[in-house]
Structure formats: structure tokens, C-alpha cells
Figure 1 (cartoon, helix red, strand yellow):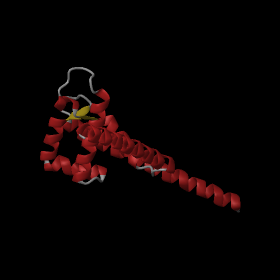
Figure 2 (cartoon, rainbow, N blue to C red; figure 1 turned 90 degrees about the horizontal axis):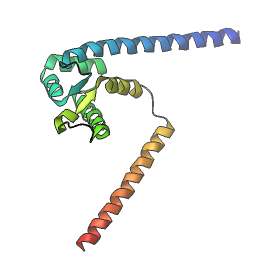
Figure 3 (tube, helix red, strand yellow; figure 1 turned 120 degrees about the horizontal axis):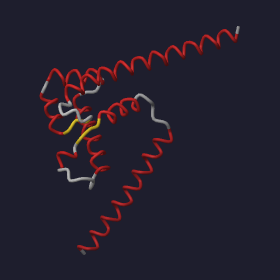
Figure 4 (tube, rainbow, N blue to C red; figure 1 turned 90 degrees about the vertical axis):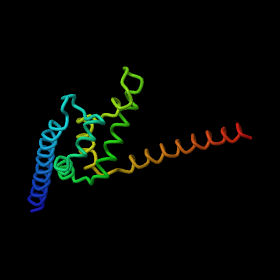
Length: 151
């Protein structure tokens, strides 16, 4: 009897995982179609100009918001975050102007959606806290240096 319950639970969990995976693949396919419409130069990324065009198209923007379940503010924040992250990584590589560097790669966007589906674990939270403490210490040192320079 316990074996049957255990087997049934395992099968139910397996079905739930399959359903989640299927939903994720449907979402990716839907977003692929949207990104093909947005990414007119077929670069695999959305630059600042393409993002502004998307934001000005209420139908496409609503579709992106609906597909991701993100609000307009969350989508704007996500674009700024992912584009800024990529700009910082690529900074100094090539001769791209500032606007050209503000790009969000489709793969990064999809990876973000996949990651946000997972709950944060204690290790992730501790890593963020450690990084914040490090930044706070650096900022305090810089402020002290500035005060000494002006004193």
C-alpha cells in the first residue's frame, strides 16, 4: 500500500514537471514569435531603438506583457537591467556607441524568465547580502576619501 502511494506521488510529480516544461516551451515559442517581430535586424537582440518602437506599439507591448505576466514597469526594469548588464560585460569591446551597447539578448531574456520561476534559496540571498555589504564598504571608503580631500 505504501509503495502504491509512493509510486502514485512520484507519477503525479512527474506529470506536474512535464506540464511545467510544456508550458515553458509554449511560452518560449510565443516569445520567439514576438521577438522575431521586434528584432527587425535579426541580430538576436533588441536594441534601444527597437525597444522604444515596441513600447510605442500597444498591441505588441500588451502581448509581451501578457506572455510574461510582467507589468509594463517590470518589463522596462528588466530591459534596463539586462541591457545594462550586457553593456557592462561588453564595455570596451569594439567601437559601439552608448545606444548600440544598450541591447537585450533574447537568450538572456529567456534565461531570466526560466530563473525567476525558481525560488531563491538561502545561498542566493546570502550572496546578494554579501555583495551589498561589499558595495557598502567600498562606498563608505570612497566617501571618507572625498571628505578628507575636501577637508
